[in-house]
Image 1 (cartoon, rainbow, N blue to C red):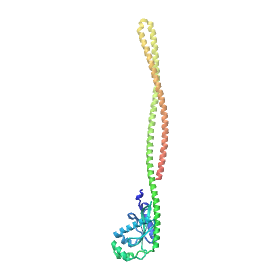
Image 2 (image 1 turned 90 degrees about the horizontal axis):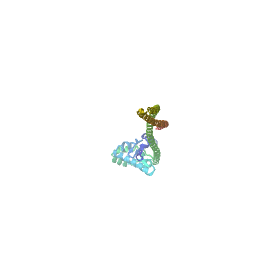
Image 3 (image 1 turned 90 degrees about the vertical axis):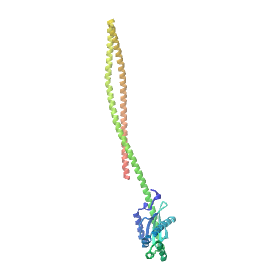
Image 4 (image 1 turned 120 degrees about the vertical axis):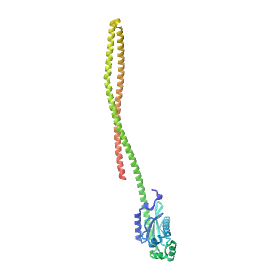
Length: 338
């Protein structure tokens, strides 16, 4: 809230101000009014017919009354004490300033009395100036209370004390409102941030669950691959056995070819090729076996890493769940504060 634009009704509501003003008027028997820099903000209390039904009913008179009220408050603000003065209509008024941080935000006005018997000719001239029937003006003037100057000053001091109390209460109320607005802004900001954090954690939790599913699928695939690799062991062994058999057959064929002499020369070539093929099969079978063993080692390593990752994911999921619970509790506390 901008302190430079604070008005009287910002620090005290109209109903409360009207009640205080009415009580003052009833206690002193004098008129009372509250104004800000634009004019009256309350209804007049205990106003005289002279002021209410004649002077203020005149456009010129009303404008002069408002100017008198403003000048009275400004004078009291300048001097730091209640201002007692004659208004433009010839009655005695007094004003007390309502200050906020050294700034005049309004005034409490009282009076509409006379300290002595009036000069009726003077008041007839005023009536003519503001466009009011002089006879009616004098008739209303004769109803105005004549109050000793000392009593008027006492009432002015009372109004000044009331204005000071309003200034202090108003300032404290304004500070409380400022703090409340600031707290509301902080609470709103925290609520929004917690909502963002909560949404992010929900997304992270969802992603972790998806990762768990992916890792589970990878783990199943790795297990299946491991079984498949193990099943190839038999095939490799069968190839090795076949190679061994071919080697034996090749040796036997060579022996028989030698026994046959020249007639077995061609058969000896075939026997040699059979042995060569067996050697190649044996070599390839060994290479396949070595490769499969490396694959098995890799799959075992993958399985171990997957287990470690899965354990870490579970830990992270538990931590995030705890954080989400804390955020929920904080949100609940913020709602209680609001």
